Amino acid sequence: MTTDQAFEPAIRVQGIEKSFKDLQVLRGVDFDVRAGSIFALLGSNGAGKTTLVRILSTLLKADAGTATVLGFDVAAQPGDVRESISLTGQFAAVDDVLTGRENLVLVARLRHLKNPGAIADGLLARFSLTEAGNRKASTHSGGMRRRLDIAMSLIGNPPIIFLDEPTAGLDPQARIEVWQTVRQLAGQGTTVLLTTQYLDEAEQLADRIAILHKGTIIQNGTLTELKQLLPPAKVEYVEKQPSLEDVFLALVGDTGETNDGADRTDDADRGGAVPARKEPQ
Image (cartoon, rainbow, N blue to C red; front, side, top):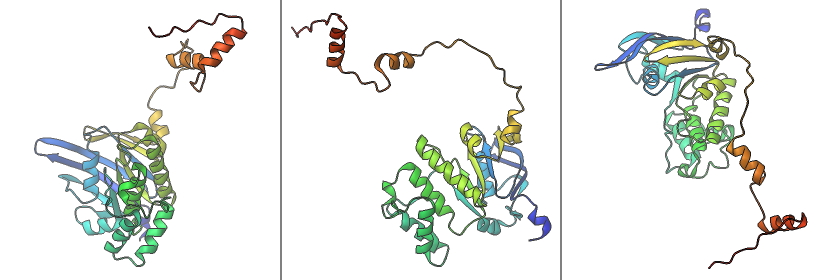
């Protein structure tokens, strides 16, 4: 690698355009991704995020513009690009008939790597899946399946990984598990390009955030830089009325458990009248 290549961004996108018949999805997209960082492409459904990822992963050709991955042109050098990346799509691509370990061994064999069993065991340990490794993938929780999917993507140690909506449809606990996995990837030097429509996900994970809207990047910067686009926050004191939750907890206690017999005894001890129970007619 030359000195110039060493300082090049891991991913460079310049003027990318893409249309499907009369629908223009990407209208000139530009951004760079620094090596070893987490870059979030934030946008609503239909903004063009997945289309852009498919172009960068050589699954789709752009109508105009250029893009490079580790210095390789995605249009002119697709083979080199594919050897440098891994792609995890919106839906986990695991084989439910196989166990977690068997899924990993299969991918390692397809990549013609030595010691596929050792590779599988290492990844199971890395992603806290050892105990579940011998169970069929169909029995794994959503978060475990997604972690297994990402683990499969890392076989061969690709320097760049594309995560397209990695937490779509996951419950809160599973999302946190995936977030921890993504942070670990970046901490070990992997460049991560993450697409998401969740604001908190971009805020929690990304070193830089690009907002894709109607096919163009309308803002690109760190979280601090993006927050500075708005006026400073004002401190205001407002009167807060009790919510129904406040009322409920005050009446029944934090546990929400009451003991009818105890309540009746307490009333009697305080000298209060204990209402007689009416038997059903």
